[in-house]
Image (cartoon, rainbow, N blue to C red; front, side, top):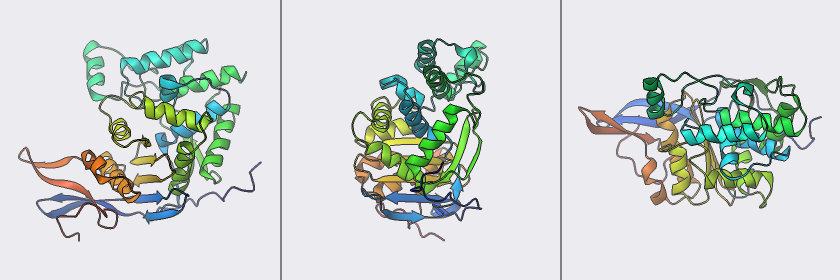
Length: 340
């Protein structure tokens, strides 16, 4: 039964996205990325919005910390590296595979019990090595294997059936849905299937910012705090070597952040300030500079964010342009061009 304190589900509609980043080459705006951005203050108040922050959308893997909280609330006893891996979109490095195997061993299971899809490692260097060595795609190498291993372990601990653990009607997924609604503060709009095979819940960008803040402001020892602490302390287990989300958590003290496919990123500071970003066309290249600009809007020292301005645009092998947040979002770094 729905809690009376929950807001209605966000509307399913075409999002009214706005320009959030410009591709500037030689002083000319060559391209525009549209999207939506929300920035919350420490008390949860709306400090900044751009685009459509209330339409239903799919958070993709940015939802994994919330899913991990649901599992911990259901008795998952993991902490540290293994809990970080349970909330991970990992790169498929050997430490990630070893961690997923360890979670399965704790549950008395093995790779054959995983229900996620098979894939090669997400990291391009690791993936190329697999291809050279003739290694086949596997469920363990797929970037969500830590989450799936933790889901199976949670089922085993609760005597829930392992078969059908990815069905939205399964007790595990019902528990996850309940926590998604609890932490976002709103009813779920739609349920579909994520790329890995797990249920995926449509909420709003505003709701995802609230949920992320709930993790970083939770009392020590709570499931929310345990997940946040594990991810911040073991950022590379939640992502991988050289990944931008891990670098961002190392650069900004106390920051929790998680990315998701199709241009999604959420982040929150220990005092509850939070941001959520959706790039409409799913472009990775716009996600980090827009997130950095949103964090600056939230009050993060811009000096801590200088390494997250995005990739340079090259001409003849040399930098001739850049990806820059639009003026409405970029209130800190002066622009060197006149937007159209």
